[in-house]
Amino acid sequence: MVENMTGMKRTHRCADLTAEHVGKELVVMGWAHKRRDLGGVIFIDLRDISGILQVVFRSELDSALHHKAEQIRSEYVLAVRGTLVNRDEETINPNLPTGKWELVVKELRILSRAETPPILIEEGIDTNEAVRLKYRFLDLRRPDMQRNMILRHRVAKIARDYYDENGFLEIETPVLMKSTPEGARDYLVPSRVHTGKFFALPQSPQLFKQILMVSGFDRYFQIAKCFRDEDLRADRQPEFTQIDLEMSFVEVSDVIAMNEGFIKRCFDEVLGIQLQTPFQQLTYNEAMERYGTDKPDTRFGLELVDLSDIVKNSGFKVFSDAIARGGSVRALNAKGCGAKFARREIDALGEFVKIYGAKGMAWISVEENSLKSVITKFLAEEETNRILEKVGAEAGDLICFVADTDDIVFDALGHLRLEIARKLNLIDDNKMNFLWVTEFPLLEYDGDEKRWVAKHHPFTSPMDEDIDLLDTDPGKVRAKAYDVVLNGVELGGGSIRIHDQELQRKIFSRIGFSEEEAKDRFGFLLEAFKYGTPPHGGLAFGLDRLIMLMAKASSIRDVIAFPKVQNSSCLMTGAPDVVDVKQLKELHIAIKE
Image (cartoon, rainbow, N blue to C red; front, side, top):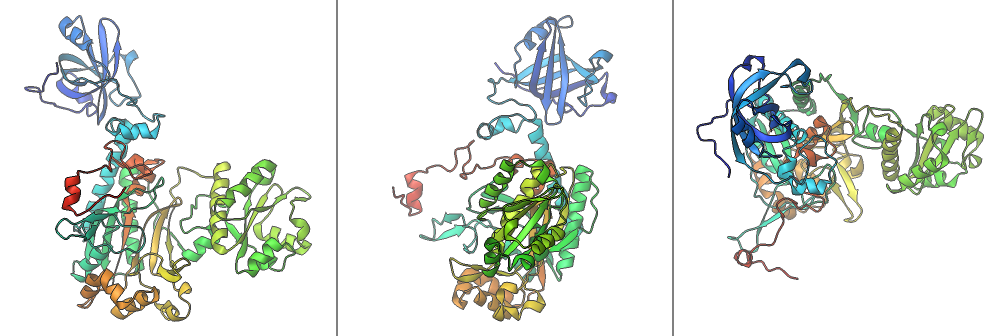
C-alpha cells in the first residue's frame, strides 16, 4: 500500500545541497535510482531532476525503518526526512556533486511502487530508439535527456529576454489558417461548421508576421509551432518549433547583426563559449563553388576546385562531354589519402558519389615519382600538370573528380567532402563554426511544372540591381536572403521581404500565378499591402536544430520531449489513430477502403 505526503513537505531538491545544510533536518523526494543492501545498512541513491543524493537506513538507529526500507526497489517514488551528515573520508564519491554528504533517514514514505522498467534509467543507454520512444515517459527520466530539456528551456528563456530587451513584442499567430499550397504539403483540418472546407496548420507564421509589420508593431517575436507533412529524417519532424521574428525598416545587415547577438548570448550563457562576431559571410555562389553546398561545414578544408577550363577540350570524353552539355568538372584533393586508402576504399568512394546522381568518380593517386590512375592516358601532359598545380597536389594525395551537371557535381562532391573528412577524422567536434550564406538565387526552375518557382517563398525581395533580370534571365536574380549555418547545419534563414505592390505582382507573374490565383492564395496579405507597408525583413531559427547542436545530440528527437518517428507516428500514444464514425459524420467525411 502506498502512502501520501500529508504533513511532509519537501524542503530541498536532492542535489541542491551545500555544506551549509550539514547537520540540518531536510525532506527530499524522488525516485530510487540504485539500492545497496549491506545487511545492517541500506543505501539508496535518490534521484530527482537536480541529481542524486545518497540516503541511508541504519538498523541500529531504527530497526522498523530499516525493515521498511527493505521493500524499496528501483524507481519506487520516495519521500524521506532525515539529517544531512558528512560521509566518512574513504566513502566520498567525487563523481557526484553531493558525494561528500548523505542523508541519515528518520522517516520514510513510499509514495509509489514501480514495476521493473523496460529500459535503464541511466546516461547514454544503448537501447533501440523505438523502445525508448514507446516508453518515452521513462526515457525522459534519464539525466542526459533531462539536461537536453533544461537546455531547451534556458535557450527559450534567453530568446524571450534578448528580443524583449531589443524592442520585440511576443505576439501569437493562428494555428488554424488558410491553406496556401506552395512548397511542403500542408496538414489539413476539416471544418465541422463549413462543410467541405479545411483549415491548414501553419508551415510557418510567415504571412501573419508580415501583416504585423503592416499593422505597425515594428518588431515581432514568437516561439512558434510549425507543421509540414513531409518525409522525415534525423533533423526533421512533422511538427517543429521556430524562434520566429520580423523587423520593420531594416536591411540585411540589421537582421544579421541582431541575430548574431542572440546566438552569441546563448552560447555564452548556456555553454560558456565565447563566440567571435561578426560571423564569416559567404555568398551562395561562393559556398557552392568552394564546398558544393549552401550549408558548408567549414571546420576543415577539402575545398572543391573547378577544372573545367583545363579539361574542356580533353581527350577524356567523360570530362569534355560533360562541359559541352553545359556541366562542369570539379575535384577535391584528399590530402594524404592516396597513401592511406586501399584500392577497394577508393572504389567505395566511387560508389558513394553515385548515391547523389553522379555516374562515377575519376581519380588520380599521386605517388613520389609517378601517378596512378586509369584516366591519365587520356589527358595531355600539360593538362595533367595544370590539374596537379591547380589542386595543390603532393606525393600521397588522392584527387577525386566528378563530371556532370553543376547540380550533380556540387551534390556529389559536397557529400564526398564530408565522407572523406569523417574517414580521416578531420572534423573537430569542439569547434563551433558559424557563417552566414547570403545572396541566394531568388528563383529556380521546376522541370516537372515547367515554370520558375520561388527558392524560399514568393515574398522574398530581389537584389535591387537584379530586378531587371526578372524579364531577361530570371535564374541569375539574387535574393536578399540569408541563412545562418553552424558546422554544416542550417540553423535558420530569412530574407528582406517585398513591400512594393508592383514588384510583388511582377514576382507572382514570373512564377506563373495569375492575378486571380495570387488573390485566392494570398489575398488577405495583398489587401493589407494596399494601405502602407514598411520595408521589413526577418528570420526564423529552427529551435530543435539549435538545441541539437548545442547538446551535441545525434538527432532532434533527443531534444524534443515527445517526437514522432519516421512515418510521422507517435510510438508512445499510438497517434495517428482511427476516430469514431460519429466524429467523421459530423465532418461529412467518409473513409474509403
